Structure formats: C-alpha cells, structure tokens
Amino acid sequence: MLLLISPINTEEAQEAIEGGADIVDVKNPKEGSLGANFPWIIKSIREMTPENMLVSATLGDVPYKPGTVSLAAMGALVSGADYIKVGLYGTRNYEEAVEVMKNVVKTVKETNPDAIVVASGYADAHRVGAVDPMEIPKVAADAGADLAMLDTAVKDGKTLFDFMDLEKLAEFVNKTHGYGLKSALAGSVKRDQLKPLYNINCDVVGVRGAACTGGDRNTGKIHRSAVAELKQMINEFE
Image (tube, rainbow, N blue to C red; front, side, top):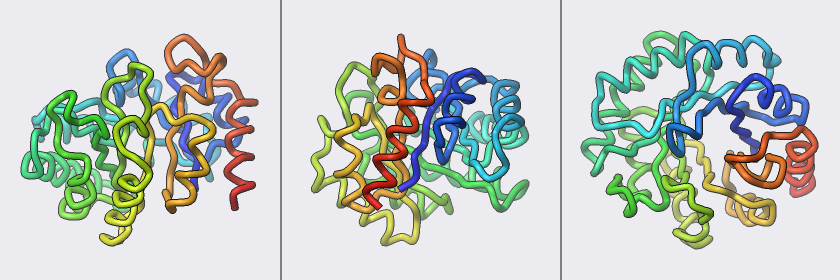
C-alpha cells in the first residue's frame, strides 16, 4: 500500500520527501477537499522531488465543465505532475462524471501516455449532491482512467469511516480491482485506520492531517517524523 502525503507548499513537500512518502500530492485545502494549487507550486515541488518519487496534483473539487477541467488537467500535466487527480464534485450522476473524466483522460494521455489519471469521488457525496461513490470505479473504467479514489468532500472532523464501513470500502476496492484499476482511499484517515485499509487491499492511502503537527490538516504542518512513522507502520503490515 503506497502512502500519499498532501503538502500545500515546498516546505511541507520537503518534509513529505524526507519522511519517505511514496507520492507527494500537491493540493490547496483553502479551495476545498481536493483544492487545486498553483502551477508554479507544482513545478517547484516536482523539481525538488526525487525522480523515483511520484508527484500528484489535484485539479480541485471540479464543476461539471469538461472543457474547463480538461484545461486544468493540461496545466497540472505541463507543470510536472505524474498523477492527475480529479475531484468529481459538481458531477451529479454517472453520465456527467464520465463525460468530465473522458475528456481529462484524452487531454492527459495524448500528451503523456504514462501519466496516471485519477477519478476521485466522495464518501459523503450525499452532503454535496455529487455522484454516488460506489459508481466511481465504473466511471474511472469507462473513461479510461487508471485509478479510482474516494475522499470526503466536507472536512469537518468526520472521517471516511463515518460514511462507509469497512465492508462497503472493501466492496469499492474489489469493484475497482475488478475493472483492472488501482484503488485509493482518503478522507481524514487516522493512524489506526491504516491497517484496516491495508487488509482490504487498498493500493494507495491518502493522508494529510495524520502527517501534520497536532494532527490537524488546517492548523498543523506536515512533519517528516509523522510521515516516517506512517510509512513505517505500512512497511510493518507488509
């Protein structure tokens, strides 16, 4: 299980790198759960990150505007992102979500076939009117994406597990694997929730708060020792 850590700037990215993260995921919490950061931040983080370490960039909690989202995807790609992550926030159903993702996949793959496209839904989609989280694996597969992910849309202290129990999360992972895709789970994931996610064969776990000082994604900052502890925990599972 790969550890994805979400820094907001180069200072935090350095902590994630030194702590041994597998994927450095550039985001901007000020703009939402999967808020987009600026191209120059992505570029700077890619330049400072070892070549063997992947850099992910979130495009934001995106609207149902395929053209706008495709342009954002190109921006993240040319800024150096290896992972292009789309938060399907404004898409209300399967059809809208697939339309957005198909255009993102076309945009990205025509420029860099090796780049990884992530369709991210929300475990608490009902709170924001987004597409059903259990449809995300099919959305990702039908659009030609590489990875299906779940996060939480509203960051109010509730975690992924407040909206989906382990049995449902296992169903999500199995459905994703059934399409031949990788799975990722995030959403204020706590340290003690890593083992259950590992046990259901989750491929990537996304963390910010648990890697921050004080365990707070907004007021704390990512620290290398916290990242190293999380990475060590996952290594010990294996």
